Length: 440
Image (cartoon, rainbow, N blue to C red; front, side, top):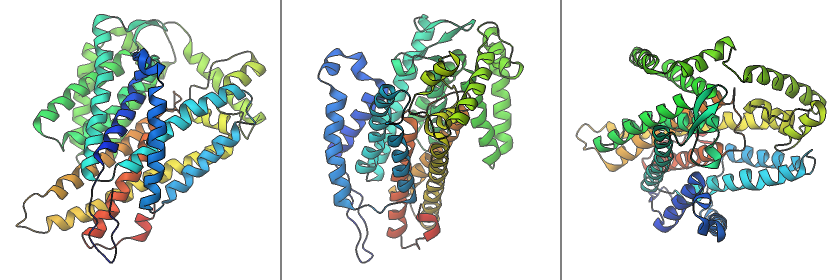
């Protein structure tokens, strides 16, 4: 819990370790799908019971602490309203209800719990470390399945790697998960000790194997998009450019021909078999036609049913942006874009405040590196990682659809926590709160 400052008092960072640990257990249960792995936990509805308990505690915690709201929170509420309104008017009511409960509501609870329980840099660092361990487990299972061949089978003319759990079973989903880990690996690498650096390097190799051998073109595009944006934004552009060039040459040298051809098909639209490029073009045409007929949306996850009604084809949009446009309508697309744009702003404003505090700490030439300096540097790195995490998913959205996945809510939770702690640091070090920056 955070003791709010009064009359310019210092705000102490404290946390309830039990709640933080329960949050980590809940996050692990969602990401690892423990109910699918362990029948006993499924029988007692472990994730639901834990989520219900944490929900009560989280609401009480937010009421007690009276955290100052942000503009982002307003857009989240508006986005939620847009989603709820779509349910009664859906062309596939049962699917919309199930998707809202199983995906939207359940995943949004993770954001609520992160905001409610992560109230100190120590808790934040622990949560990020736990998250990386959970993700390492999923990557390890994928690589193990690749080595043994148990998770590799033919799809669209090539041997493709699949995930070990239902939500990652499709190669595109597994690739999306793996490539979204790379921003965290890259930015946190410079903030951890040697042992953890070795851990992150292994994790990067695992992520790279998964991205390559899933044969996911959306994964390839997102991977290149990450390094492209990193190159454009980085001060050491030449170092990143040559590192990327060397890595590319090395990968092409060892990459089996079938995966190279898969990557090449992004540009040539020529495939070994399956004609998925032609199918995607047809989906785009159908989605545009349906969005013109139904400009206010057809409902949550209702596109396959209405597409079957109009055209006799049931495949989903395979595009995040078409998914939003067809499911939630033009109003949903506008609200979602405003929410994501504000999410980037709140991450940037948090970094600006943290940099101001870090600069003040460093002004003392005789200082020793203090705990605040380490925590602030780590938080800045995590903020950059979340920003690029979002960028990766925006690239993935060009050829994949993950509107109802946990990734967006995970990023929202972390962004709000970083921003809140940045404001507290700013106040504790006697710095002026820049209204236009911190209001997000």
